[in-house]
Length: 236
Image (cartoon, rainbow, N blue to C red; front, side, top):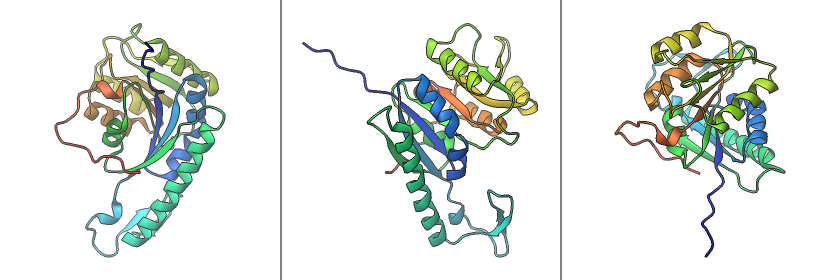
Protein backbone atom coordinates (compact mmCIF):
# COMPACT_ATOMS: atom_id res chain seq x y z
CA UNK A 1 0.00 0.00 0.00
CA UNK A 2 1.32 3.43 -0.85
CA UNK A 3 0.57 6.43 1.32
CA UNK A 4 -1.21 9.39 -0.15
CA UNK A 5 1.23 12.21 -0.89
CA UNK A 6 0.33 15.62 0.46
CA UNK A 7 -0.05 18.18 -2.31
CA UNK A 8 2.64 20.82 -2.66
CA UNK A 9 1.44 23.98 -0.91
CA UNK A 10 1.07 27.22 -2.81
CA UNK A 11 2.49 30.63 -2.16
CA UNK A 12 -0.53 32.73 -3.15
CA UNK A 13 0.87 36.02 -4.43
CA UNK A 14 -2.17 38.30 -4.28
CA UNK A 15 -2.33 41.90 -5.44
CA UNK A 16 -4.82 44.50 -6.59
CA UNK A 17 -2.61 45.60 -9.48
CA UNK A 18 0.37 44.49 -11.52
CA UNK A 19 2.39 47.28 -9.88
CA UNK A 20 1.71 45.90 -6.40
CA UNK A 21 2.72 42.37 -7.45
CA UNK A 22 5.90 43.54 -9.18
CA UNK A 23 6.91 45.61 -6.16
CA UNK A 24 6.73 42.51 -3.95
CA UNK A 25 8.47 40.03 -6.26
CA UNK A 26 11.72 40.13 -4.29
CA UNK A 27 9.86 38.86 -1.22
CA UNK A 28 8.11 36.20 -3.29
CA UNK A 29 11.49 34.90 -4.46
CA UNK A 30 12.82 34.79 -0.91
CA UNK A 31 9.78 32.89 0.31
CA UNK A 32 9.97 30.34 -2.51
CA UNK A 33 13.68 29.80 -1.83
CA UNK A 34 12.84 29.14 1.82
CA UNK A 35 9.64 27.13 1.51
CA UNK A 36 8.72 24.11 -0.59
CA UNK A 37 5.83 25.73 -2.44
CA UNK A 38 4.48 26.52 -5.89
CA UNK A 39 3.72 30.11 -6.92
CA UNK A 40 0.10 31.00 -7.53
CA UNK A 41 -0.74 34.49 -8.74
CA UNK A 42 -4.04 36.10 -7.77
CA UNK A 43 -4.97 39.42 -9.33
CA UNK A 44 -7.94 40.98 -7.56
CA UNK A 45 -10.24 43.23 -9.57
CA UNK A 46 -11.76 45.87 -7.30
CA UNK A 47 -14.18 46.87 -10.08
CA UNK A 48 -13.68 50.64 -9.95
CA UNK A 49 -15.18 50.96 -13.42
CA UNK A 50 -18.40 49.37 -12.20
CA UNK A 51 -19.02 52.00 -9.52
CA UNK A 52 -21.62 54.71 -10.05
CA UNK A 53 -19.56 57.90 -10.05
CA UNK A 54 -20.65 61.28 -11.33
CA UNK A 55 -19.12 63.02 -14.31
CA UNK A 56 -15.92 64.98 -13.79
CA UNK A 57 -14.47 62.71 -11.12
CA UNK A 58 -10.90 61.46 -11.48
CA UNK A 59 -8.69 58.85 -9.86
CA UNK A 60 -5.08 58.84 -8.70
CA UNK A 61 -2.90 56.67 -10.97
CA UNK A 62 -0.04 54.51 -9.62
CA UNK A 63 2.44 57.25 -10.62
CA UNK A 64 0.55 59.81 -8.54
CA UNK A 65 -1.07 61.67 -11.42
CA UNK A 66 -4.80 62.37 -11.73
CA UNK A 67 -6.56 60.57 -14.57
CA UNK A 68 -10.08 60.24 -15.88
CA UNK A 69 -11.94 57.17 -14.66
CA UNK A 70 -11.55 54.50 -17.39
CA UNK A 71 -14.51 53.09 -19.24
CA UNK A 72 -15.57 49.48 -18.72
CA UNK A 73 -13.91 48.49 -21.99
CA UNK A 74 -10.67 50.25 -21.08
CA UNK A 75 -10.69 48.54 -17.69
CA UNK A 76 -11.22 45.12 -19.28
CA UNK A 77 -8.30 45.65 -21.67
CA UNK A 78 -6.04 46.82 -18.86
CA UNK A 79 -7.06 43.89 -16.67
CA UNK A 80 -6.36 41.40 -19.46
CA UNK A 81 -2.87 42.84 -19.94
CA UNK A 82 -2.16 42.78 -16.22
CA UNK A 83 -3.32 39.16 -15.84
CA UNK A 84 -1.01 38.17 -18.70
CA UNK A 85 1.90 39.99 -17.05
CA UNK A 86 1.25 38.36 -13.67
CA UNK A 87 1.15 34.96 -15.40
CA UNK A 88 4.60 35.70 -16.81
CA UNK A 89 5.89 36.64 -13.37
CA UNK A 90 4.54 33.41 -11.85
CA UNK A 91 6.18 31.36 -14.61
CA UNK A 92 9.48 33.09 -13.87
CA UNK A 93 9.11 32.38 -10.15
CA UNK A 94 8.39 28.72 -10.84
CA UNK A 95 11.33 28.27 -13.20
CA UNK A 96 13.78 25.79 -11.69
CA UNK A 97 11.65 25.44 -8.54
CA UNK A 98 8.29 23.90 -9.35
CA UNK A 99 6.45 22.53 -12.37
CA UNK A 100 3.18 23.71 -10.90
CA UNK A 101 2.10 27.31 -11.09
CA UNK A 102 -1.04 29.18 -11.98
CA UNK A 103 -2.60 32.61 -12.09
CA UNK A 104 -6.22 33.43 -11.28
CA UNK A 105 -8.43 36.49 -11.42
CA UNK A 106 -10.90 37.31 -8.66
CA UNK A 107 -13.36 40.11 -8.02
CA UNK A 108 -13.86 41.82 -4.68
CA UNK A 109 -11.77 42.49 -1.60
CA UNK A 110 -8.15 41.30 -1.65
CA UNK A 111 -8.26 39.74 1.82
CA UNK A 112 -11.50 37.83 1.25
CA UNK A 113 -10.39 36.66 -2.20
CA UNK A 114 -6.96 35.55 -1.01
CA UNK A 115 -8.37 33.66 1.98
CA UNK A 116 -10.95 31.97 -0.25
CA UNK A 117 -8.19 30.90 -2.64
CA UNK A 118 -6.05 29.35 0.10
CA UNK A 119 -6.08 25.57 0.53
CA UNK A 120 -4.45 23.24 3.06
CA UNK A 121 -1.08 24.70 4.07
CA UNK A 122 -0.97 27.53 1.52
CA UNK A 123 0.78 30.74 2.53
CA UNK A 124 -0.49 34.15 1.43
CA UNK A 125 1.66 37.04 0.29
CA UNK A 126 -0.60 40.10 0.23
CA UNK A 127 1.17 42.53 -2.06
CA UNK A 128 1.22 46.28 -1.75
CA UNK A 129 3.91 48.79 -2.54
CA UNK A 130 5.47 50.02 0.71
CA UNK A 131 4.97 53.75 1.20
CA UNK A 132 8.36 54.09 2.90
CA UNK A 133 10.27 51.60 0.77
CA UNK A 134 11.60 48.27 1.95
CA UNK A 135 13.20 49.76 5.04
CA UNK A 136 12.42 48.92 8.63
CA UNK A 137 11.87 45.83 10.75
CA UNK A 138 10.16 42.59 9.83
CA UNK A 139 7.28 42.39 12.30
CA UNK A 140 6.20 38.96 13.54
CA UNK A 141 2.66 38.90 14.91
CA UNK A 142 1.51 36.06 17.13
CA UNK A 143 2.15 34.80 20.62
CA UNK A 144 5.90 34.77 21.28
CA UNK A 145 7.41 31.28 21.47
CA UNK A 146 4.43 29.56 19.85
CA UNK A 147 5.46 29.83 16.21
CA UNK A 148 6.13 26.85 13.96
CA UNK A 149 9.43 26.18 12.24
CA UNK A 150 7.85 27.36 8.98
CA UNK A 151 6.93 30.72 10.48
CA UNK A 152 10.36 31.28 12.00
CA UNK A 153 12.15 30.28 8.78
CA UNK A 154 9.96 32.70 6.85
CA UNK A 155 10.70 35.58 9.20
CA UNK A 156 14.45 34.96 9.27
CA UNK A 157 14.64 34.72 5.47
CA UNK A 158 12.78 38.01 4.96
CA UNK A 159 14.90 39.76 7.58
CA UNK A 160 18.17 38.45 6.13
CA UNK A 161 17.16 39.43 2.59
CA UNK A 162 16.41 43.02 3.59
CA UNK A 163 19.12 43.37 6.27
CA UNK A 164 16.35 44.04 8.77
CA UNK A 165 15.76 43.26 12.41
CA UNK A 166 12.93 41.02 13.58
CA UNK A 167 10.44 42.66 15.91
CA UNK A 168 7.97 40.44 17.78
CA UNK A 169 4.58 41.25 19.26
CA UNK A 170 4.35 40.59 22.99
CA UNK A 171 1.97 37.98 24.35
CA UNK A 172 -0.16 40.58 26.12
CA UNK A 173 -0.64 42.94 23.16
CA UNK A 174 -4.21 43.21 21.92
CA UNK A 175 -5.15 43.50 18.25
CA UNK A 176 -5.96 47.22 18.58
CA UNK A 177 -2.57 47.87 20.20
CA UNK A 178 -0.78 45.99 17.43
CA UNK A 179 -2.61 48.03 14.77
CA UNK A 180 -1.53 51.26 16.47
CA UNK A 181 2.03 49.98 16.60
CA UNK A 182 1.99 49.06 12.92
CA UNK A 183 0.51 52.43 11.99
CA UNK A 184 3.26 54.42 13.71
CA UNK A 185 6.21 52.13 12.94
CA UNK A 186 8.52 51.81 9.98
CA UNK A 187 7.93 48.19 8.92
CA UNK A 188 9.33 46.53 5.78
CA UNK A 189 7.13 43.44 5.98
CA UNK A 190 4.72 41.74 8.36
CA UNK A 191 4.39 38.02 9.04
CA UNK A 192 1.18 37.07 10.83
CA UNK A 193 0.26 33.61 12.09
CA UNK A 194 -3.53 33.54 12.28
CA UNK A 195 -3.55 30.29 14.25
CA UNK A 196 -2.06 31.80 17.42
CA UNK A 197 -3.64 35.27 17.67
CA UNK A 198 -4.31 38.04 18.41
CA UNK A 199 -5.58 38.23 14.81
CA UNK A 200 -7.93 35.33 14.06
CA UNK A 201 -10.50 36.49 11.48
CA UNK A 202 -10.73 37.89 7.97
CA UNK A 203 -11.86 41.20 9.42
CA UNK A 204 -8.79 41.30 11.68
CA UNK A 205 -6.56 40.62 8.69
CA UNK A 206 -8.33 43.29 6.65
CA UNK A 207 -7.62 45.90 9.33
CA UNK A 208 -3.99 44.78 9.52
CA UNK A 209 -3.46 44.95 5.76
CA UNK A 210 -4.97 48.43 5.66
CA UNK A 211 -2.72 49.68 8.46
CA UNK A 212 0.41 47.92 7.19
CA UNK A 213 1.28 49.91 4.05
CA UNK A 214 3.72 47.08 3.26
CA UNK A 215 3.58 43.41 2.15
CA UNK A 216 1.91 41.01 4.59
CA UNK A 217 2.75 37.28 4.75
CA UNK A 218 -0.11 35.21 6.18
CA UNK A 219 0.22 31.78 7.79
CA UNK A 220 -2.87 29.73 8.65
CA UNK A 221 -5.32 31.43 6.29
CA UNK A 222 -7.42 28.27 5.93
CA UNK A 223 -8.11 28.03 9.65
CA UNK A 224 -9.38 31.52 10.41
CA UNK A 225 -12.89 32.60 11.34
CA UNK A 226 -14.75 33.55 8.16
CA UNK A 227 -17.92 35.59 7.72
CA UNK A 228 -21.05 33.70 6.67
CA UNK A 229 -21.25 35.55 3.35
CA UNK A 230 -19.71 33.74 0.43
CA UNK A 231 -16.75 35.30 -1.36
CA UNK A 232 -16.61 35.38 -5.14
CA UNK A 233 -14.61 32.40 -6.31
CA UNK A 234 -11.42 33.07 -8.26
CA UNK A 235 -11.76 32.64 -11.97
CA UNK A 236 -9.02 31.50 -14.28
